[in-house]
Length: 72
Ligand code: FES
Image (cartoon, rainbow, N blue to C red; front, side, top):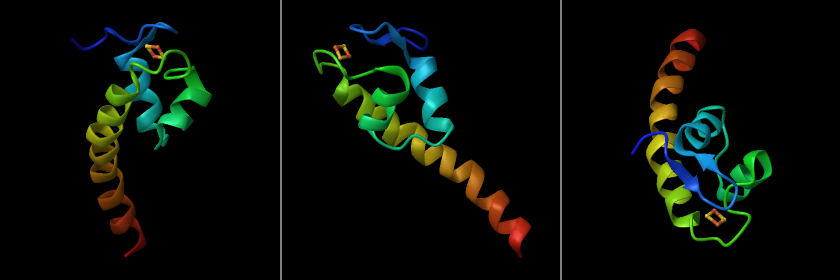
């Protein structure tokens, strides 16, 4: 399923959405501002929320320990 269109209205792929999340986008509204995902019919918004939960947390796990170590 990876790489398929999540937002059919704007032809936005899962890879693109995950890319924005990893760059720090934390809300569905934010994704819409960056790549238009979720700005049409709205059917994909639930999927966007799930990706934000899944990959937002993963990105935090990767980034926070490195930052914490650098500051100690
Ligand atoms: S499928 Fe994303 S807004 Fe319609």
